[in-house]
Image 1 (cartoon, rainbow, N blue to C red):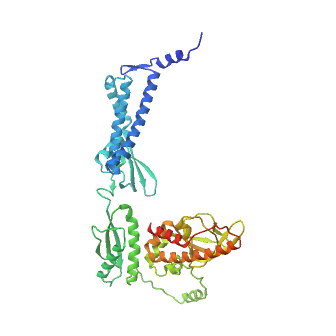
Image 2 (cartoon, one colour):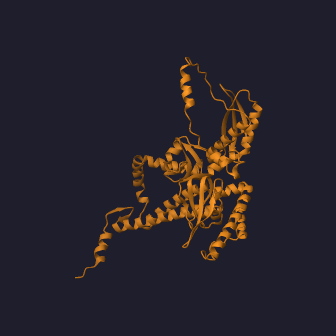
Image 3 (cartoon, helix red, strand yellow):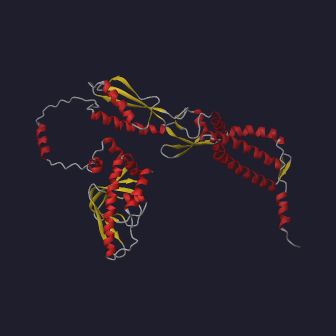
Amino acid sequence: MTFSPSAWLTPFFNTPLWRAGGVSITLGWIISILVLFVLVTCLTIAFKSLLKNRLLKSIGFDEGNREAIATLASFAFGAFGYIIALQLTGFNLASIAVLAGGLGVGIGFGLQELTKNLTSGLTLLVERKLKVGDFIEFEQTKGYIREISIRSTTIRTVDGAELIVPNTILTSNRVQNWHYPDSRIRVIVPVGVAYGTDPLIVTEILLQSAYMSVEIAFNPLPKVIFNGFGDSALNFELWVWVEKVEQAVFLRSSLHFIIEHNLRHRGITIPFPQRELWLHNTDSFEAVKEQDQEIVKPSKPLSLKEMLLEVSYFKHFNDLQLRVLIEMGCRKHLQDGDILIRQGERTNYFCIVLQGQMDAFYENDKISRKIFTFNKGQYFGELPLMLEVPYPTTMQAVGETLLFLLDRQGFQHLITTYPALAEEFTQALTQRQEELGECQQKLREMGLLNSEDLKNPVSWLRQRLKSFFAT
């Protein structure tokens, strides 16, 4: 007697477990329906992705409309696919309509929250008051809508976190949509000036400050509102509009810097509440005053602003230009002998020496020779940065050294904003390349360098610099 696996497995998969919908439910039937459901689910996901990212995008729908249409269409596609899968297995849906209705009531009571979320998801997708890409605020949470599904909505907060929110929260609570009907918002900047200041002068300065900011929208135009007379100041407000709500915080910060700068340079003070203090028995304070005068106070260290003003390239920068420069860069402290970068390595920083000294060494298997010294106010790193080549030398600190570093984006912004600096950098770099060429020639005559080492003709250098400035 031979053992046949099929003879044993066939009864196992085909043995009826119960009857429903006019068919006998077997283990084989359950497996086949699960396979069909998985296939329908995969097809639904692919259908949504194709519809959202290809078809609707090619037609010209925005992100919010693509998400809503693709979600509703895939929901209908999936429901239709599941019904077809049941029909293919011979399941008669009409025969269980009454049973499904009874189960629906029971399931509805047990899954009220899920049902509410599904209904809320459909509401959000159909009403279109909230769309993918909108910036919303609710329950002290701010963020962008990344996805609206049937049950929940994904929100990316301003802190970069992904927040999964049930749809009922968005439909049953107050939600502020900063992008509805458009993304423009008004930014209000309160300003107080000392009594005795000409209000017309203040109005002129505030409007001038608004037009100095590149982020503002000019429709409607900026306005200055004289709010009234405060306890210690004349109270004004500057009203400006910004095209995108996410720019509001940066615009407000920029206006604070600009207004303070302009008021200070026009001799207008921003007052603060003052109180008079009467002191009795002041003789006891004289001894303390004399002791304070005897104490030698340590010298105040130079600020980054003061150190940058000592650099010849930035000595004519005003406070606003220095603020932008400081925000683009960072400081780097080095001790005596510290290596910033070795020859052959790559970096994306333009370096200015604020304090101390940096030596540049050319190294190979035969020699290690110092060929440049960069002192306070000088710079290096522009050649590898702009030509996208490895460092030709090893950079080592001499004594305690402080550098100011600008990355590629910051350096490119600097030289495109100030063309005079770009030309000055080009001239200095060209001169340095000529000196490096003379040094290389001497080393080759001594037999310490190969003829292929570090060839950078000046004409090729200028061409590469021009292409960098044009980007």
